[in-house]
Amino acid sequence: MTIKCISPVDGSVYAERPTLTRVEADAAVARAKTAQIEWAARPLDERIALVLAGVAKVGEMNDLIVPELAWQMGRPVRYGGEFGGFNERAQYMADIAHESLAPTIVEDSDKFRRMIKRVPHGVVLVVAPWNYPFMTAINTIAPALIAGNVVVLKHASQTPIVGERMAEAFHAAGVPADVFQNVFLDHQTTSDLIATRSFGFVNFTGSVAGGAAMEKAAAGTFTNMGLELGGKDPGYVMENADLNAAVDTLMDGAMFNSGQCCCGIERIYVHESLFDAFVEKAVALVNTYKLGDPLDPETTIGPMAQVRFADGVRSQIADAVAAGAKTHIDPALFPQDGGAYLMPQILTDVTHDMRVMREESFGPVVGIMPVKSDAEAIALMNDCDYGLTASLWTPDTERAEAIADQLETGTVFMNRADYLDPALCWTGCKDTGRGGGLSVIGFHNLTRPKSYHMKKA
Image (cartoon, rainbow, N blue to C red; front, side):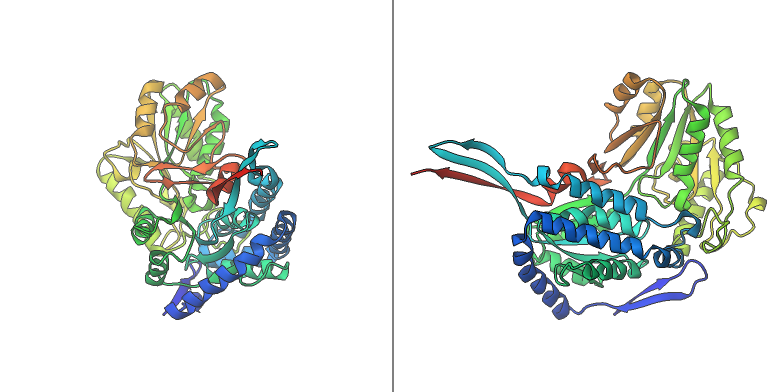
């Protein structure tokens, strides 16, 4: 079997790779397990240095990587790729590694030495998505390797070259080939490997259905898992918000990367006193966007990664309009709309009876609703099957925290959105998944506790 990357730029086959047979996949896992013993025995400082050297090598490739990303998944070259966040996350995890992985000493007396160590799971499978293919992958790869695990990376078929570039960089930096392997696997082989307990930890970022398939494959194996699945992240603009800042940030959060962001803003609730002004400013901002070829430095919105993704969003919009929603963006401003190229859209007169306000869109569309109170906003924000992030807009920190305490979500932002802080746990609830990456908790999830109770003679 082969996997194909169909470029959203022009519909051509941009890359094609053969998948491993089951025998080849088993051999890759066996090599990884053997390599992990020696890798874990290396000093922590040595592992950190090699990982950061690999990260730096990725940075050296950035001029090559940026147009490759445009061809593979459609992000405009004007944004310069992902190395800033990629490097920030890896560097932070390196900085906290010693403290996060240090043993917890309970007692060290003349009678007993009692402590809890953090030990690696062994082989970590990272199944990475296409939308932010470098940054999402490094969230797990860097701390996993630093903690003494080895990594098998299976990247999305839409971005197959990303895994190859990462492996090339890390190997060039001195990370052994069997310690960090990039592989191409079909779904069945992936499931079979999980079902036979090939991995000590599996991290998957993708769809809810994909996460359910991972859990089904792991049933009865007790394999540790981290799952970041769907999202329908809300923003709430209170009556005392900085209106201009809220519009700029929330609309960027809704439209950047053609709306294909894990923590992108997909629904906005605005206090009724600011609603008309918010919509007016939001429409004016979106009208300035340019949809087109992502290789053109003037383009601000490129194509979605696949035609079927764009068609799915078109269907949500059409259903909403048929049910009474109002569109605000004139198609005449975006003549390139068609196929994978999807114009941005703002909807009002929307309700939670509409799919566009309940199902993940993962595209450049946002519905905006007026609300009368915090209580109404909280109820609407929680009226969702997902829980990744929420964005609150107010100068009142106490009020924002009181609202945040009532929200069913993994992260709450105040006066910002669509950002991953590596010092905080990246996590979700409900259908968004389970587990947590980055921060000290990321290290703890990529290791297991091992207790030592040593009575001195």
